[in-house]
Length: 413
Image (tube, rainbow, N blue to C red):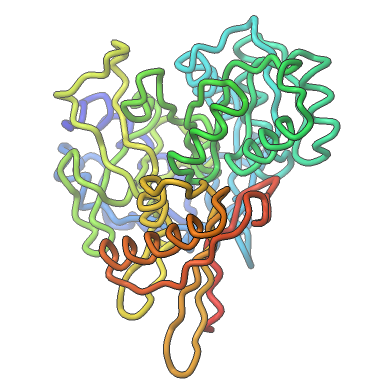
């Protein structure tokens, strides 16, 4: 994908701002004149930034504005140790609301909808981002936050919520609970906007079928506004993102070299409009690909697209010399009859060897369950070339989460 001249101009402007601010990026870009960045090739020579850099800039070393212009701070949900503090100006908050509004509109959500928001509020960007966009759209907002499933279902029924915003894990928990209670006929949901974690096709199908909704993947990260920077449309041909606010690249995570459109790699984001904490070539560690623009989306929108997030480079575990991603397990399980969407991987070290136990939920019993375990073992060995001990368990036996579900437990260290 070619870099627009307007994009280059915005990048040069952002480089001047962060250099003038004297913070983290002033040091990172020392000796580089923004006026020398005149092509995509020039831009791709600029250094990357990573989450560790953001931690090192604690508390406000990322800020490119005077402190009296900062109206809010957020912090990444996944950060341990020193947090990443992301300052926002009023313009940043307004821009984020606009981006999220676009996402709702792409999903076919209107001001007539009633938007039921279950992700968390506070320093995490999730809940408040969903709310900002809903209010910008002009829709009724029901800011529930996470937990208290009894109250969630009561409000869904009484407020006649039409859109559910949730992590995939909590959407599944709600779907299962609604089915158990037999109150699906009193639920008015028509769409679900799901984000914050990877989810496979079987989980998607279960949530869609049990809630009777159309589902949309929404993408974002706290370091770059929050959720609401990309979403799929009704044709599910990838997630549209907004290149007037953001510049996306995909690189080889090992070499750092840019990859051609269509090839899977690590997403790198540069913010074009952000004031409080502009980011230049920020490595997200999310795995995706840029969809070539010679295959336009049937919806007619001209926003560029990335594929759904396939996982994270830091989700990978190495077992018996083999690199394993949770997404690989999901891809295998989706084609196995009787395997549910829910699974967990336990890795430990026994008698000098790594051992992988894979728990998979299934409604099958008896000989059918044993046959499923054999098929799981054989297919994983064939596709990933690693041996696992499959353990089929009842549907509902594995824990459900109100936030993100942990899939891999590594007890070797």
